[in-house]
Length: 141
Image (cartoon, rainbow, N blue to C red; front, side, top):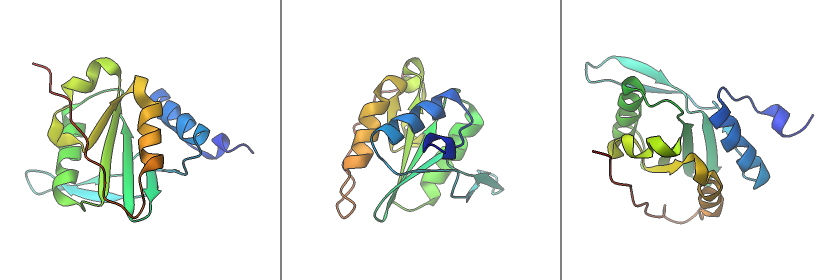
């Protein structure tokens, strides 16, 4: 069985991210964590990040998003408000959609064309160091 065969992905974009992580030797897991996120009304919604990459105590949750929907954005924004600063929420989106994602919905965002750079950034993160700052793109509009 090949390394890639052990991975289960649900979208072409997730498969692209996974393949690059395998190529660069970045250990990762698919849907290995489960969280509950409270919405504005106080109800809890389930959230299981697509990809988890661990760098010491720092968790990178990578969410490939081919479709940007309001419910997904609200869930991610709520997640960031409610969970540890040692979790870095990373979105990978089609190039044309990156500026449509509000900055409060992620810690880092990368266009699909920069999956190699995103993977290298995670791989090079010092497990014992601080998370490097990320300059967020300006939203469209």
